[in-house]
Image (cartoon, helix red, strand yellow):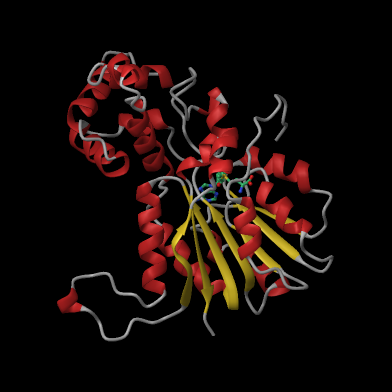
Length: 322
Ligand SMILES: C[S@@+](CC[C@H](N)C(=O)[O-])C[C@H]1O[C@@H](n2cnc3c(N)ncnc32)[C@H](O)[C@@H]1O
């Protein structure tokens, strides 16, 4: 794929903390489930020796092309086109692992969500701040666009998705407004989707009160639904825990509370901690991981000020037990 317009910079989030907590022994074997533009990869590889190997996975063709441009000269890195939830059975992954990491990985990183590249390119359709087609796919080569996904919804299913993935309290009237706009031929672009939301929650009063843009929750929800972002995240984390060698570490960065809750619950379960109702507590939960900083790590004030998109990020870390 050709990379023409200059790519918006994606500043890797919680970089110091990731580098500090992921252990990078000699001949390190690292799996990056969300390579993006390779910012974390570059910093981690800078601390690895010449015998180390790094496998970067991303479902976005443009991100992969840019990461290759940035890191392609480094013979230690391989890039794989795949969704992280599907990577575990991918023949290229299995072959790479058999060749380079038969004992498991020393470090696995999942920096979830969208990159600045995706958000800032209007033609990708992720942002209500710029006019673009209603696409929102991370993998631009497969799957329905946001518009196609919306067109396949009913009032009820769209409202459920807005509520579940966007925690949008006005989900029902907003779902009706969106599908009305679609039926009347007024839903083709990101602006159209935002305008449909504003017919229910006007933008100006929210702005005057310093609240987030009323379209934020709807855009988050549609994006999560279109990309199936939460659907198989728990399974991916379980597979990641299995793929670590004993003593190896997993780092997961999430950007919104729904995602972080799922990451937290999954890692706690894999650490043998039972969060369900007391009466039914199973006696033994298999204990695969040890949590590091159980409350998670947030960006420092300095990082949040320098890189505002990092503000909502949270890093969760765990180590594979023998
Ligand atoms: C926050 S960015 C990663 C940025 C990267 N750490 C860096 O420093 O440049 C997230 C990346 O994960 C990718 N991604 C999100 N969900 C994915 C999935 N399920 N499978 C594979 N890649 C995914 C996105 O395409 C995006 O490029």
